[in-house]
Length: 334
Image 1 (cartoon, rainbow, N blue to C red):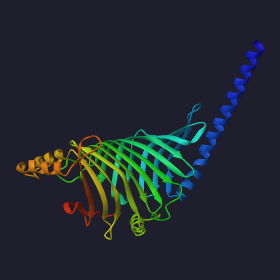
Image 2: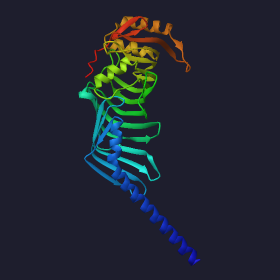
Image 3: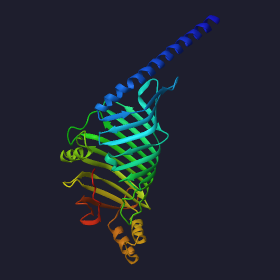
Image 4: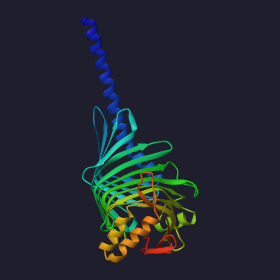
């Protein structure tokens, strides 16, 4: 019995020693290989830089800690992200899936500071695959600057899938994206609707080639190449009104958004009440407006009154059916 116990002890000791050797050798390779890995990503349009690099996590994980991390990207569009501290953790036997976090916050800026957002904290994961890379992020206490001034959200969640190779034609996917906002303020929403959104969820696919280089040049080439944004689902809840939208967006000859969509609206009575409260509709007309909306609505699968309308964006105007209901601001791409 003592021999068996001694043998088991030796085997455990050898296995532990082998594992420790594997861990430290792998950690050494990870640290030594980071510059080469970053150089390979730069060729794909992602330039990652850092001031300090530490590898740890023994014995149950491999952990990277990057200080002063900055990412300059040109795919699928130009942007810059930076954080004072970024951590990445993977299990010893799966080095393709990493949990990432920026506990001290992070910032994301479009080119020439066209728009930027800051987050008090960031967490998520990155899955490196042969055909695509999947990124899932949750940003907390988000605030906007520049073109995103006055934008804020308690939580901004994103799921991004980037194909391994860029789109070659307008039929190819450059980016698949899902975005969810909770308790957000969107100042661009026209009156009389409140800019405070309870929930916003968007699932979309960006199609068309995106060239490396300057943002304006890439945007023009994307438009000229037939680039589109396919909105598979856009769901918004605010003030008792719910809107679901599907459709397609693109850029017109003046580099302004254009598109054709379909919207399903429930709780339209609440929108009428909001219009009255904002002074955009006289109270005496509210009853008539609600009656008309009910007359052209139909029951949805849940038994609620739903209004189905076509939406069009053309010449910087938003149309519901043939009627122009809002003028849209001119976008200066920089």
